[in-house]
Each structure stands twice: as structure tokens, then as C-alpha cells.
Length: 156
Ligand code: 5GP
Image (cartoon, rainbow, N blue to C red):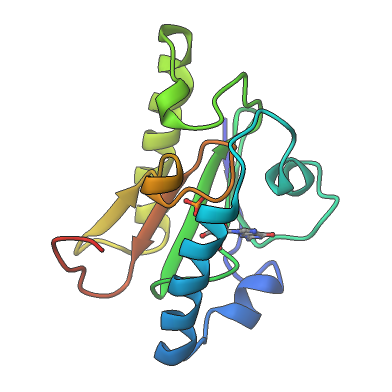
């Protein structure tokens, strides 16, 4: 059974949640640069350190399988990353095999739970970036839950 964690329980989210639109645009550009610089690999990533609490994060939901925490460079008022605690080869969605169906479902179901927790009744967006062209920068599968403003289409 998962448990909800108070949104204000960490510091990083508070520090980064008030970035100006200018800073948000800059971080979009640097996200792309980070994605193009990232080397796809099955090695441990920064997310393992977040799971192990070796580096701080603003956790909003946690259970035995899944961790959800605020993105350090939010692209919207609500921007949360949902990750499996055990990667099991799932560096990205393109590496999914049938055995991963359960954890993939849990990631999406957690997105729904956290969206409700965050009060995103009017809608939200779920994104999974994959590979360099998909702008993936961290090779530990993660779902972005983004909301709190009007989204646009097509995405960039
Ligand atoms: P990707 O670009 O791979 O789809 O998403 C990776 C996300 O991880 C980015 O949005 C980036 O801002 C976020 N991120 C990278 N390092 C950290 C970190 O140390 N803490 C947190 N909370 N988010 C991070």
C-alpha cells in the first residue's frame, strides 16, 4: 500500500518551483542538450541515488515498487517524475519486455493517483521521453506528470 507524502516535505521542489518563464525556457534548452549528451546505458543513474535517499528530493508518493518526486527543473507548476524502484533493464520504454507490463501499469496508475493528490482535476499530461530524439536524459525509465497550466499541441 502506498502512502501519500506532504507536497512541502522537501526543499528542492520549493527552490525550483518558482522559476521564471525565462528560466523555464533556458531549462528546456538545457534539457535538450542534456538529452543529446546523455549516453544510453544500463548503469546506475542519479535516480538510484534519489531512491536510496543519498541525494535529497521532494518525494510526493512512495510505495514498495514506485517513487514519485518533483522534477528539479519543472516545466509547469506541477512536474513530477514517477520511477520504478527496481529498473530491471528498463532504461527506457523502448527496452520494455512482457515481464515489465506490471511495473509499466503501476507507473501509469501512480500518475493518476498523484494527479488527484496534486488537484489536477482539469487535466494533466503524462510524458515518457525515449532515446536521444525523444529527449531522454536519464536512462532509468520515468513518467513525467505535468500539469497546473494549459498544455499545447503539438509538443515541441
Ligand atoms: P528526461 O529528460 O530523461 O525525460 O527527464 C529527466 C528529468 O530528470 C529532467 O526533467 C530533469 O530535470 C530531471 N532531473 C535530473 N536530475 C535530477 C535530480 O537530481 N533531481 C530531480 N528531482 N530531478 C532531476
